[in-house]
Image 1 (cartoon, rainbow, N blue to C red):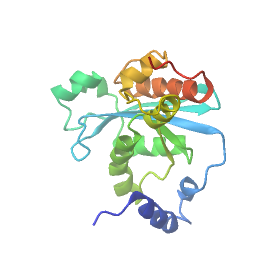
Image 2: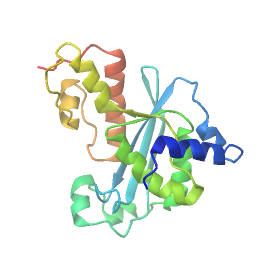
Image 3: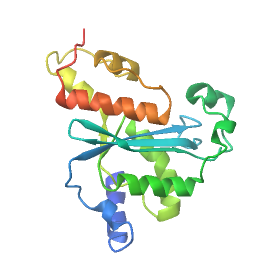
Image 4: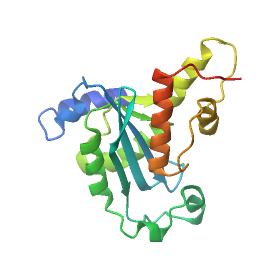
Length: 208
């Protein structure tokens, strides 16, 4: 039986209410969001392994570029030519990568209980849960913000019947946001952060 994530989080919050990670389950009351991206060896969650993780904090309409995380992991066994074609990360590029457990702990410390933002963020959450749950006994509890949903709700208002193109490249172009090193964890995290700020604080995008 598949347990819904919302139900599982309630149980995990109770189980970890007095543990070292109890703060991750607390309701966030600050004004920051963390843009997050993982580069992996596959788009199949069951097969994918993480090669890099990046995150950058956003406060109101500002990217806190000095407060960012950019981690490369040790090369996983599933690193292949097909995945290298996408993220351009070779085994030699991961020679100084760190162990996955250490990377996960750095990420949890960095994001705390802030909301996390991403493009197809549920994929990143499911991938990270594969590493976090065996190590700590819980999944990523943070509130998730999906960039494409914000974009869709924004452009749908003036023309509710129109189909909305939610491809990453299209959203970037419509918002006039340059793509920064596409298919790298840091580049995608920064690009998503910029698109989020534009949608939240800028002019309504031109969809024509």
